[in-house]
Each structure stands twice: as C-alpha cells, then as structure tokens.
Amino acid sequence: MRELERVDLVELGRRLKAARNAARATQDQAAERIGATRTTIVAIERGDRRVSTEELLSLCDLYQTSPGRLLRPDAVHVDLAVQFRRLPTVGADQAAVDVTRVLHELAARYVELERKLGRPLEPTYPPVWRLSRGQLPEQAEDAAMDLRGRLGIGQLPIPDILGLLETELHIRLFAVPLPSSVSGAYAYHEALDACILVNTNHPATRQTWTAAHELGHFQTDRQSAEVLADDTPDGAPAEQFANLFAAAFLMPAAAVRARYRDLCEEQGKFSPRSLVYLARSFYVSPEAMGRRLEQLRLFKKGTFDALRLSGLDATAVRRTMGESSMPEQQRLLPRYTLIAVEAYENALISEGELAHMLRIGRIETRELVESLDGLWEPIDEVRLAHG
Image (cartoon, rainbow, N blue to C red):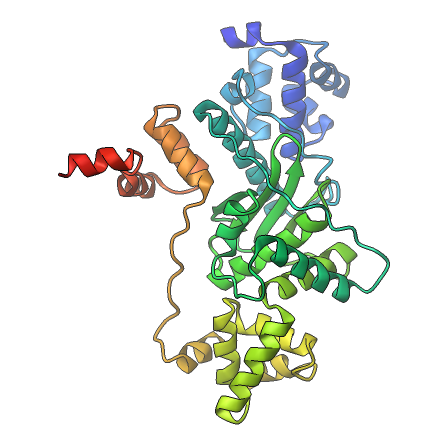
C-alpha cells in the first residue's frame, strides 16, 4: 500500500483518532483489535508510530471506514467527539451511535464534493439566540418569531421547512433512511458548518417536526450536537426549548388563534374534524396541533389525549379527511443529493459510492440519475437542441 508509505504520520494519526471517535470506540478496543497495548494506539494517533498495512485494515474494520478514505489527500476528517459530548461514550444506544457516524460521514463527503466541484455552501446564519434565566416558553416564542421575521415569512404556514433550511439558512441538510427509533440529529463544526439529519422513513409531518426541533438546537447552540431519538429525555432545558421552539416556529400563536376562531365561527363549534383541518393547514400532525392548542389555552390540558383515547388515530384522521390513504410526501432532493449526482455525472465518484452516499439501493440510484439526466445543461443549449 504505497499511499500508506507516503502519508504524513501526524495527519494519519489525527484521521484515525477522528474515525475512532466517530465509531464510538475506545483506545483499548482499538488496541485489542490489532493485538497491541493502549500506548501503541496513543503513539499511532499522535503520529509517533507508523501503522502497518495489517493494522490499518483491522482498524478500518473496527471503525467502519475504508483505507482509501483515510489515506486520500483531499478527504475531510473532523472529530465530532466534543460536539457529541452529551451522548454517552460507552453503552450508548446503538442506533444513536450509528446515526452520529452517518451524519459525520455524510457531512464530510459533502464538503469534499463541494470542493471538487467548486460549489461551496456559503452559510447565512442568524446570530445565536442567547437563553436567559427567564421562562423558556416566552423565550421560544420570541426566538421563533425573530427567525420568522429574518426569513420574511411572517405568520405564514411553512409547507417545506426542509427546503427553507437549505435555501434560506444554507444549513447542510441530509434526508436519508434511518432506524425507526431515531428521528434525526444536529451537529455543528467549523469545518462542516451546521448540519441537520432527518429520517425519511418517518411520515412527512414527523420529518417537519424533527427539522424544526433541530432548528431549535441550532438557534441556541453552535458548539455541540444531539441525536433526537424515541428515548431522548424531554426534561433537559435544551430539549424543552427545542420542542417549544418547534411548536412556535411551525404554528405561530397569532395565526393559530385566528384560524381557530375562523373555524369555530364557520362550524359553530370546534370538532375533531376542525383539528385535522387546522393541522393540515399548518403542515403538522393533529397531535402537534392539539398540543399547541393546549399550550395556547385554546384547549384544556389533556384534551388531545382524551381525543386519542376516544378514537382519533391515524385511520380516523384519514376517514375525517375523506381519503383512503395519506398523500405520499413529494420526493425531496436536498442539495446534498444534487451535488452527489453531479459528482457522479462528472466521474468523480462511482455508482456504488453514490448509492452509499444517498443510502439507497443501486436500482433506486440508477432511477434517480435517469430522472435527472439532461437537467445539468444550460437552458439555452436545451432550447436550441429541441428546436
């Protein structure tokens, strides 16, 4: 492996440490894998000792990476261990561990392809919202309305928050299939900027909530990261704020109150059907809207739980809307996807690597590439070619 002989030992050591942290592996585990002591791993990661080919292959297997990625000169390697310090290093839920690795890999590869294509993403972030000792609900409302004002959307519903994050804030957005127990993740690193990961295996309304929740973390924290999972505790102030912010950002208080009053006047009452219509008009789930109405004291506390116990489930929602099934979400093509496909079209990556980056199968990858075929040419050339 000639690349191994030419690589700078200090840089390789840094990359190996970053890969180990991304895999949530300890130095003792790495040492055991190559049949050495912990001090050997320390020396390798400091650049004081050259790693052999056999050792490199063993470590790559443990870290779930490839020798090529570690040795490629233009590869981007960052250590997100500090950013994910809130997550337990040992004994963490495996799904959460895997998601941190996915986010790390996707973001690093995204930056690499941008550099190769000469298409850097220029962040346009608002200032960090500094939380005070005041009440979190009021601060979340203020932060949400401040950001809405900066984005120029006022009280309007947000039909596509994922697109909004990308096009207006230039946050690195990744929408890929993830384990069902994980909704998404957020991380910030100076080499990667802000990154948000959303699980496309979840319904569209849940993806919307996840994106808004992670946006809440982004608003107040440009130092660390988090994974939103089913077992994420809601009691921590950061999580409380993120949930309150998501509700306020997606469902502005004044707009919800006005629409609520309109529905009451139109129908003479506010029924479960009204709740479903109101939720749909703000592109959120009936549960999210029900909780918001309780927050705004338009519903008594516990109203939505009572509605759910009385039969307001997913099937009832579809029946209320007069639909046989919920409409499928329009396929999202984040900038990351377009960058990856463009890199493939320019022979910078293989079809297999493209499929891996998009977390889809080879057949789906080919279908996606075919659907985008011809969309890279200048408009004038396309017009002239077709007469």
